[in-house]
Structures are given as structure tokens and as C-alpha cells.
Amino acid sequence: MGFQEDYIFWALAHYFISDQEYRMIQLSKSQDELWLEKLEHKEAKVIRLLKYNLDWSNWMQRDIENTAQKAESIRRQLGRKELPILNIYVTAYPPVDDYEFRISAPFMAEKGKASVQTLIFDSSHPESINRIEAIFHDPLSMPVGEFTETDADEVKHATLSKAVSKAKKEKALFNFGKPFFTYIFVFIQIAVFMLLEWKGGSTDTSTLIKYGAKFNPLILEGEWWRFFTPIVLHIGLLHLLMNTLALYYLGSAVERVYGNLRFLFIYILAGFGGTLASFIFSPTLSAGASGAIFGCFGALLYFGLIYPKLFFRTMGFNILVVLGINLAFGFTIPGIDNAGHIGGLIGGFLATGIVHFPKKKKPWLQFLFLAVTASLVAGLLKYGFNEPGNLMNEQTAMVMAQEYIKTEEYDKARSLLADFINEEEASPEVYFLLSYAEIKEGDLQKAKEHLDHVINEKAAFHEAHYNLALIYLEEENTEKAQQHAQKAAELNPGQEEYQQLLEQIADLETSGQQ
Image 1 (spheres, helix red, strand yellow):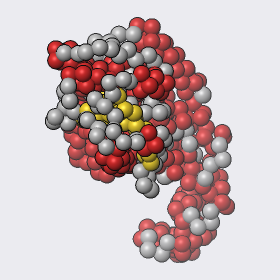
Image 2 (cartoon, helix red, strand yellow):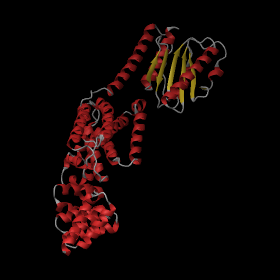
Image 3 (cartoon, rainbow, N blue to C red):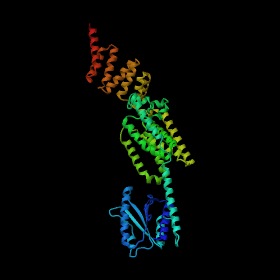
């Protein structure tokens, strides 16, 4: 092979890398075979350049078949349905025998879906230039004449420099910063989990509320910090392990791309977004870093928005699959706060748009993201605080009432439950809890009415019968007291208090007769 073929080989490589944005994926040690990739191109997702003196067409046929087998392997690795490959031979002369029929149509791998379209570049190559220009819809300028070793070395150096420069720029996008805050948050959530376990248990409702879980009634009372504190709280060991593992991998990736301070902003705003969405759309108590972690997904999706080609060539498919699986689990498995997940995803995407990429400013785009984020947050907060009736369900009302009862704030518990009963169709359990608060406040008549409602709705509610027995005993109606105490004991024979109450009533009746 002479300098003429060297020059053509590297000139073609330069055209594909520089003008057509192909990426170098493999260069042989002898530097006479080069593989390039651009998966978004429809007609030539992969290009193979080979510098070789073609003597006989049967050798070329075997080489095309081997290339097709390699292409099929690449297709499977990439998970593509089809993979068109452009196979270009740079040679001093075409094969000496008949060869046109071998390259007149793309060669298909046996039982495969990879196709190989072959072109031959020889000393007279106008036809090949025309075919390349037809494929890429872009002119290919190829000088004619004799080329020296210096000419070939210059275009080779320019081509390799361009390829290396592109690779370095791409690598730099993924390695701007080193994870720091990711590890800080991992440490914090493990430490907080240990604190919760020490103070009463990470699955204990009272403990979770005390240490900052998202609880709508308290947010409505002004405890705004509950939009942020749930980010480091977790309910149970499995919840902690799953989120810590996800944070370690996703958080590290995002922090490397965006840097430490940008990651901190993205993570906190995503966590806030997740809690805000949960506040609006899910009345139940919740906690966890899931919203902030989904915000990391949002940050990577923003990366895909700005660098779509690089995104889908590297991590895009895997990110979308994992995200889809997580969202599907959220919609199908009960108990998962999917509103928080989606809110975190959106929050992370918007937060990333506000800070954009390190050393790359887009003021108008960043301002647009800031305006959209501010408007969305303001609108959701206004809706949440102006329509509080939509933010509480029966479970939330009962949990809040029980917290009031623990602190002996019976008037607050009574007011909360009475308001809920007036607005919603409540279960017997709500009426029973309301009656308990009324008993503690001395309103036995109201308590009796509500306990009657409980046993009418749920006759086997033995605690209601027991409390009714106590009220009737207080009113010195031993007959009614004995009737309900007997019923409570029948429903739950193992309850010692019920037996003691029956004995107490029997003693009163005996002493009364005497």
C-alpha cells in the first residue's frame, strides 16, 4: 500500500469523524482497519474502513461475511432490531476478477438482521464519492493527484486529534466533580435511622411525626420544615437499604456530571418537590429520600435533553428502563408514595434546568426553568393551603387525633374528628376515638351517642361495649352497664378488664339488694 491509499483512508476517516460526527470505536494496531459509530444515522449506523489491496473477489466475499458476523454481534450487544453497516475498502486497484455482483446489494448475515453495504475506493473513485454523498447528503471533497507521506501523516494526525478531542470532551462531561454530598447524605440518613430506632422505632408513627415525617395536618399548622426533613427519614430497614443503594449510585453519577454545589441544589429541590407533590396528592404520612433520588433521574433526563446523542449512546436506554420499572411499581404496589416520586422527578429536572451544566451558561433557558419552577411551587402551595380538606383522609385524621390524645389535648382531638365526620363518611373507629376524647372531656352524653353509633355499625366492636358499660355505670344504670360489659366479655373473653368490670357490677348489684 502506498501513500495514496494512506491519504484516502485517513481523509475518509476525517470526513466521517469531523463532518458527520461519527465516533471512533476501534482502530487496529496496524492502523489499517477503523470502526466508527453513529447510531442515530439511519443508513450507516456503523462504518468500517479497511485499507487493503484487493486481489481476488472471493477473499473480499469472505471478508464481507466476517464483517457481517461481527455486525450481528454488535447488533445484539446494542439491542437493535436492525444494524446497517457501511463497509469501505481503500485499495490501489479493485479485484482482478468479476466482483460487482458481490457488492451490488447489501449482504445480510445468515439468520441475522445486520446488513453490510460495501464500497470500493481505488485510484479512480468518483463513483464511490457519489455513493457516499448520496448516503450522507453532504459533499465529500477528495483531492486528486499524488500524495506524499507528509500529506498522509498530516491528515492522519488531524483525524486522530479530532477523535481524541471529542472523546476527551465527552469524558469530561461525566467527570466534572467528585462525589462529596452524596456520601454526606448517605451518612446522614443512616445516622437518622439509628436515631429513630433508638427513640422508638423507624416504623412507629409517633416517632416519625416527632422527627419530621411529612404529615399534612402539621404542615397546615405551619411546620414548613416538614417539606425538607422527610428526605433523610426512612420507614424500616429495607426502605433505608434500597434508598441508600440508589443514592450511592445515582447520586454519585449526578454529582460527577454537575459538580458538588449543583448536585446539592438539585437534590434538595427535588426532595422538596417530592414532598410538595405528596402533600398535595397523598394525605398519608410519608418519609424517605425517594423523591430526591427520583430527582437524580430528572437530572439525568435533563442531560438527555441537552446531549441526546451522547445520552442514548451511553446510559439513556438503561436510565429509561429503570425509571419505567420504578414508576410501574409505584402505580401497581400499594403503599408506595408515587406522587412523591413523580414530584421528585419533575423537581430534579427543573432544578437541573436552573443550574444547567458547569462552565456552560444558557441564561434565557435557565431563567425560563426558574420562572416555571417558581410558578409551579407557588401554585401548588396556594392550592394546598387554600384547599386543606383535600389533604386529609381518615387515617391521617386518626393519627393526628391520637397524637393530641397522647398530649392530653382532648379538645383539639375532638374538634379535628368532629370536623372530619361532618365532611366525610367516617368508619366506626373514628366515632370510637371521638367518643374517647368526649369521655375525657366529661361529655358523656355525646360519647354515649357516638358509641351507640359504633355498635350499630359494628356490633362486634368490644371496646365500644366496654366504654358504654363504664358510662352507664357512671350514670348508676347497672342493668345497661351489665348488658354491655357482658357483651364485651363474650366478644373478647381473654380481656381481664372486662371480667373485672362484670365482677364490679355484680358486687354493686349485690350490695344494692342488701
